[in-house]
Image 1 (cartoon, helix red, strand yellow):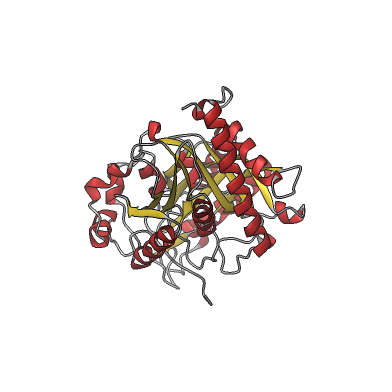
Image 2 (cartoon, rainbow, N blue to C red):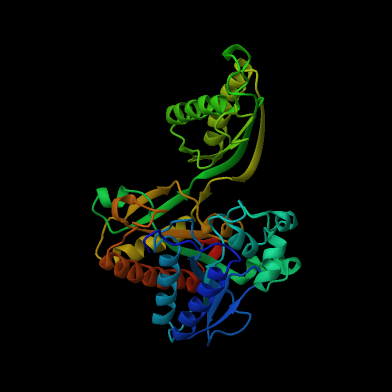
Length: 398
């Protein structure tokens, strides 16, 4: 754990954690299977085949150098709740899904597991490559999956009642307000781009007036992005940068960097991007550089269903917190993809210092216990609404 955890899609670590999750599911009274996309699924053994299911879950993959709780905490909460409800009569089946790829660490495209589950798999993703040049197609074959059958992981809307996900907050709000749990109202609109700045590689002795230094141009662009994003209150992250030819005495002819841009709404995100795009073009023109921009991921904001948010709030109140806190999620989650299939809601759990995507991720044991109690109560509240055919909850009308 000194360097953190790394567990990426279609890797030996993915296979090992799926096997562990399957054993946990069976111990909780579920039968378990791996779907066509590599997601590990579980369903209460006594639930009739064909009965629509309330799905609980999160993801098992990680970023490099990760901590113990991002994603996997939600899977463990879901399994524990399923075990508590093993012999409880519910008006729907209960399933747990441990999604295989939320982070997009290996192939650069996020939410692959939950997109496959939700019917959004794209055939062209089979041609994505990892850092070693291995395609997703070949990695799937090596893992034991048929890449042509991955779309068969898709569920039908009529087979899924709703989706609930517990997750560490990945931010400091709960800790600052001394709260263990929170209700997620919506998930940010996000877009990722790859920006290539093209100049000219020359000897390091080249005079200033004829240099076309791609790295200096990219550096100015990155600083401009930071300022524009701050002005618009749209979180922006440059998480990757590479330079060619990457030699100590050669002016860089190519600089490539990633941009992750988020906002509460797609409209706000796009307004920020337009300001960034204009400034990038101005900098390129001033420095006699050219720029190529590629969008690698885009998702609108996902608003959590009000009736399910209320069920999560009911769950939190059952733990003794009478005024559940509403929180907006800047981080993306599997619920974004599943929201294309069915209604979704999320429960946030306090994490120390808001630290995530780092080996020092930490949660309190009593907060985890509270999250299990809250999710348990939330499932029972959803069951009551479903049985009543709640007119204010159209997704819960059986």
